[in-house]
View 1 (cartoon, rainbow, N blue to C red):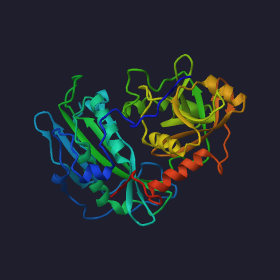
View 2: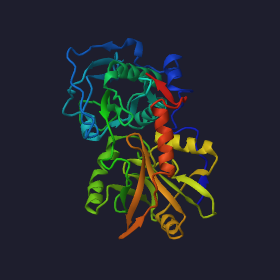
View 3: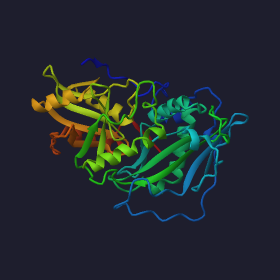
View 4: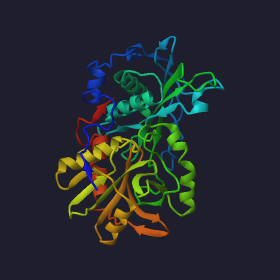
Amino acid sequence: MASVPVPASATSAPSLKGTGAEASSNGLSDSIPSFKACDLDIDLVQTHKPKPDLAGLAFGTAFTDHMLTVEWSYQGGWQRPRIQPFGNLSIHPACSALHYAIQLFEGMKAYRGPDNRVRLFRPELNMNRMLKSALRACLPSFDRAELLECIRKLVEVDQEWVPHSDAASLYIRPTFLGTEPSLGVKKPSQALLYVILSPVGSYFTTGAKPVSLWADSKYIRSWKGGTGDCKMGGNYGASIFAQYEAVDYGCQQVLWLYGDDHQITEVGTMNLFLYWTNEKGEEELATPPLDGIILPGITRQSILELAGKWKELKVCERYLTMSDLRCGLKENRVKEMFGSGTACVVSPVGRVLYQGENLQIPYQQENSLASRLLKELTDIQYGRTPSEWSFLV
C-alpha cells in the first residue's frame, strides 16, 4: 500500500498566493475578463426578516435578507455584480442547468468570534475549487479574488445573521449554473453565478455522536475520469438513492467503495480519515489520495496540515481497502475513523456494516484525535486561536 506525499494545495487550480485577506486587499487578479467587486450594485431590503431560532433548525432551511447575483453571456461577458433582496430566480424552461446538470456549487461558513468579529475559514481554497469545477463544467472563468470580495461584502451586509454562538455559523452557498435557453447539448452561452446565506447549527441530528455507515460496492459515487473531484450538484443528487438504502439497513451514511478491492473513498458527503497503527507498526493518520475520485476538501487539507505540524504521527495519503480495515480491527490496530467537511467539521464513525457484518470502530470522545482536531479547527474558525487561515469580514 504505497503512500503519496501530502499536497501543498487541495486543488489543481492556481493558488491565490496567500491568505484570502491578501487576495481581496492587494488586488491579485487572474488577468481574465471578469466582474469587479468595485462595481457592486447594492439594493437593500426595506424590512428585515425575523431571525430563526437555532434550536432544532434543520440545515439550510432559513435564509438571510440578501443574495449576490452576477450574470454572464457570451455576447456581453460578465455584468455588474449585484447584492439584492433574497428571492426566487426566473429561468427559461430549457435552461441547460435543468436539463444537463451544467451546475456547480461551493460550501463555506462565516463564524462569529468571542470578539464579535466575523471570520471566514480559508475561503481562497473554496475559490480555487470553484474555478476548477467551473472549467470542468464548461462555465466561464472568473477572477477568484473579485468573487471573494463580493462574498465578503454580502456577508458584511447580512452580518447580523451570523449567529452569536460557538455552536452555530452562517453557511455560504456560492452556486454557478448554465442558463442557456435551448435544448442543445453544448457549452452554455449564458450563465448565472449567485450566492445565498443560511444560518445553521449542527449538521447531524446526532450532534457529535459517532455515525454508522453502510459499506457496499453496489453503488459508486465517482470514477476515474469523472467529476468526483469537482463540487457539482449531479454528484450529490445521484447519491441520494443509496443514502436511503443505507437508512433501510439501519445506518446513517454511505461508505463509498471503489474497485474490485473495495477501496474506501468517502463517507456520505465527507472525506474520510483512518487513525491506526499501520502494517509496519507506525502510528498513522491516513486518507485516500486525490486521484480524481476524491473531492479535495478544505477541511481535509487543513487536517493533513495541522496533524503534519504536530510531528507526532505519520500523516499520509494512501489507498485503504475494506480488507485493510477488517484486518486492522481484527488485530486491534484501529484507533479511530472519522469524516471531515465544511458542514460537520469532524464527525467520528462508530460502526460500519459490511457484507452482513457490523464492524465496531473504537472511539473515546474525551481523548480522541477527532475531538482534538475538532477543537483546533473550531478555535481557528471562531477566532479563539489567531491564524493566517482566518479571513476577517
